[in-house]
Structures are given as C-alpha cells and as structure tokens.
Amino acid sequence: MKKSKKHCFLLLLIILFSSPNVIAQSNVTQLENERKAILKRIGNIRSILKQTAFKKNDSTGKLEALNKQIESNSLLIANIKKEIKAIGLEIKEKLSSINLLQQDLAQLKKEYSNMVYIGSKTTRGISDLLFIFSSSSFHELTKRLNSVKQYTQIRQQHFKEINKIMYLLNNQKSIAEQREATQKKLLQARTEEKKKLVKLKLQQSQLIINLTKQGEKLNSELKQRNQSIQKLDKVIQDSIAKDMEERALEAQRLEMEAKQAELEKAKNESIEKQPKSKKIKKNKSSKKETNKTINEEITTKFTKARGKLPWPVKIGFISGKFGISPHPVLSGIQVENLGINIQSQKDAQVCVIFEGVVKNVAFVPGMYSIIIIQHGDYYTVYAKLETVIPKVGQKLKSGDPIGTIHTDQDGITELQFQVWHLSERLDPIWWISQR
Image (cartoon, rainbow, N blue to C red; front, side, top):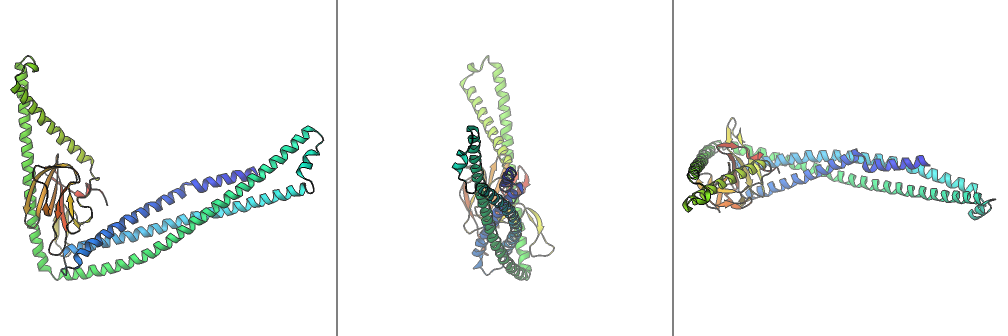
C-alpha cells in the first residue's frame, strides 16, 4: 500500500512538473507568438500593397513589396511546420502520461478491490461494533478500535487517490484533444498558405517579366535615383560638418573662457570679491559646460539604445537594405543604399526615434523634403517627406511627429531613413527594434 501511494505521488510530480513537458509547452507558446507576429506583418504588407493595386504601373517598389510578402509567407509556412511538430511532441507526451495514469489507476482499483474483498471476507457476519466490544480486555478493545479506524482511513485515502488519478487522467485527455484540434487547424492553415505562396510567386514572375521589358525606363530611373542620392549625401555631410565645426569652435571658446577665468581668479584674493561682470562670464562658461554634458549624456543614451529604438513609422516594412545589393530586375547592376527604405501607408506619419535637435530642413530633388536631427554625436536623417512640421533649432522628444511620407506616381509611399555617428554612416537596421 505504501509503495502504491509513493508511486502515485511521484507520478503526479512527473506529470505536472517534468521538464520535457514544460519545455514542450514553452516552445509551442513561443512559436505561436512568432506566428501571430508574422501574420501581423503580412497583414501590414497586404494593406500597403492594396494602396498600389489601383495603379496600373509596374514598378520596382511593387516588386519589393511583393518580395517582402513572399519572404514573410515563407517564414509563416516554416513557423507553422515547426509548431505542428512541437504540438505533435506535446501530444505524444500527453498520451504517454495518459498511458501511465491508466496503468496506475488500474493498479489502484485492483488493490482497492482486493482490500475491500479481504475486509468483507474477514468480518463477514460481524458488525464493527460487535468486533470492538467483544474484546476480552480494555487493551484489546483499544487495539481493535485503532485497527478499525486505520482500516477506514486507508480505504478513504485509497479512494481519494483513485479520484485524483481519474481527475488527472481526464485533464490530460482533454488537453491532448485540444492540441490535436489545434494541430488539424494548423495543417489546414499551412495548406492554404502554400497555395497563397504559389499565387504570389506567379505574380512575382509576371511582374519581373513586365519590368524587364522596361529596361530603358529602369536605367533612366536608376540614374535619376543615383543623382538624388549624391545630392542628399552632400547635404547630409555638409550639415554634419557644419555642426561639428560649430561644436569645435564652441569647445575652443569654452576652453579659452576657462583659462581666462583661472587668470582672473589668480589676480583676485577670492571669488566673492570678483566684479559682477566677471561673475557673469563665469556663469556663461558654466552654461556652456552644461550643454557639453547634455550632449555627452544624449550620446551615451543613444549608444545604449542600440537595437531598441522605435521605428520612425507605425506600420511599414524594410523595402531596401543598407549597403550594396543587386538591382531587383536589371541583371549585373548593383544598387547602393546609404540608409534603409521603409515602405508604409499613404499619408503615413513619421516620428523622430530619439530626443534631439533639428539641425537642417531642406529639399532635395528626387528625395523631396528632408530633416536632419542631432542626438549628441549621432544624427538621424528622414528623407522623401511630403510635409515637414519642426523648424531648425527646435528640440524634439522621442516619438514627436516630424512630417508625412511622399507617395510617388506609382503609388509607392517610401521613407529613406539614415543613421550617422559623426561623419560615419551606420546601418539603421541594427539600431531600430526588430519586428
């Protein structure tokens, strides 16, 4: 009996707290969350593509959006496949637990039946009271009384254990049935997504064929794009160089004023006896020192925020990566991107990703309105804007709106976003949070 009780208790712990079971459930939950995130991403891309559907023009922007949808759809199918496999392992573990519980329940019922049978056979025709009061002495009476009490407690405990195992068994069966239903739905979803993927790839092939026929037009667009990028890059470099020069001059002035203050202090016996005009100079120096400290703090905060900064738009996807990559249509042609392109919805609002000061607002042909914002030693650039809200010198907080994105004649709404550290270009993908 004791062995059976110990077995039940250990089995209960194994079922409820075994690490493989917990790990399997955790893995399934993680994959489920990933699937929801991918579905949300696909939904955003589809909503963006719908805005260009009424345009009959075939464009590289449409192709980039279609490529992104195919990529996301492929990720979704791979994720569903992993989730189906993980659920399969979980169901297998549940069935194993159910089998163990059924074996244990059968053993408990057998032991309980034997105990009841032996008890009834031993005391057949004898009531408990007669058995107790027929004792020859008080000591024997006490022993018989305790025996009956212990026998009753054992039966009750055994009955509780049977009920507990039955509850666990039903619970495990219910979970297994739910997981099987989920697995069937996922299998159906994977089949549907595969059909969608085939359809998307056919659209992609047709679009590439149509665009290939427009080689001359694409070459002309690429030439204009490169000219616009060069002009934008010059505006950015000139703005940063100017800002760095102003900061260097300010640092020199600060250093000179600090030396002057030391000379003034040496001429006077104490700071309290200095003339008011000299005190004002010291306060001015202190103010500039404060500005320098603020810049250093912002630089440190921006550095620590690497990979955690918000996106400049609420809804969007990266349609052009940083660096050099092959042209999506033109064979053998390389395209350089000094930042990243983010496709979004028409009239999408752009927000600054970190606190800073507006250093330049300009217009560049092909890149439309641009804003350059300083964050200590870092700069963020927002190009292809239709409207601009802040003015030069204005201080902004993270999340403040700065304008809306321009939508071109093909219906593509795309932001050009860059990150600089002093005069060095950085890949923005490593600075904004992952979606």
